[in-house]
Image 1 (cartoon, rainbow, N blue to C red):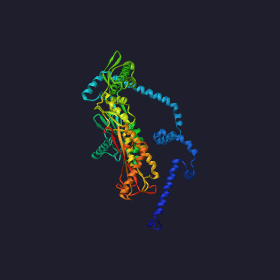
Image 2: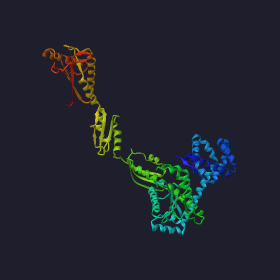
Image 3: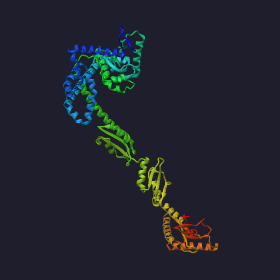
Length: 595
């Protein structure tokens, strides 16, 4: 739009008015700067141009940086707080790169620091001992003990309450806008409730006071009293510190709270104003909050208890050493006696001490463990122990088993075990000779009333049965229409003859008889009469061969069945068509000699 002047001759746009106003303001500011700086207005433009074109050089910064750091450090601690994270990262990087650099740098102060720490610890210990003696030997201590008995509190708790000036027991860091707990620390030996619940209640109390009463802007809740407890609240722009104090704290303590809240705002400025519920970044604020955990006790008048607690210390030390040695010796001895009494084959009837020696009476099986070995295991001097153990035969199964093994001497394939019922079980496999000896000798073993060999395998019988199975499984094949074996069957006949001889020897040792029955067979071709004669001739042929090899004739019988037991079909062997019905088979009959 167009603005008309009062004389009606000229017009101006709003942009022109704004530009003119801006230039006028700039001229006025330039004039003000010239007056403040003491520079003529016409030279002020030259100064601006110089500053704009001037390049900051590292040399210029190096000249003013030390002085600037010193001036800032004199003003407040913000520069120190700002440099702490950078210095911590630099130290961490230096340690990771070369640990020797830092160790060499702090070496000169490690010795004095260590000595000072030890001296401080000793001083605190002496002060604590003085306080303990004061509280233990004074008349006041008896009153406190009586109070502890009447109130049900511990003596230490009563002493603390009567000598405590004040103590900051808990400190809460609470976000101001949300009321959420950011960090919480507790003094040692203080039982703390749920910190989040306490934080919520404090926030609710403050909101209640603000909403229910006519509170001026800027006013805030600073103190809450609950009996002997006081809650101090120190607010900052974005966070609040609340301290739970027992006793009467001086106002100087508020300076500590204020310093802590200021440092926390300086260190965690971004985290506080951008808080979204994540409290982990505020874990680093514990060092600031710990400065608020102050405690102060009444200082009693100093008394010199040097001789008293020196004497008490020496007596206590000597008593503790004597007690420790006595308890250790008694524990070793009790453990030794317990193990000795639990050993199989050892029975303890009495243990007593006489003339500085332990007398052990009881009984011991000769196969039981030696007492000297148990003494050595427990590091007990054998010279102070006099075992008087009478020999006896223990009927415990493990000792009966040892005697059985010593008497019967079983082969490695046999294991012996004795049950509580007095039955000796033999399991495994053994030859006939050992089995017969064991049957006769087990009665001479004390504590055994029965010998059980049902799970014991006779190796000789097993071998005899094995030969029987192998022989009865074999079949000797013959040429078609002849009594002559196929050439490939002759080695098999020799193996059968050898196994029969071995079987007869084993049977004789076992007092058994073996009867050999040879059965001849033919194929289905030919007449029945011819097949019977041919099968009988084949069986007789094998019988003569066995007799020639030394087998007794009266133990061999033959039978020709012809084609009566022909197999269902022929088969092939080694890619040759061979009728397995043209065969001779064997049947062994094993009987006892007395039958």
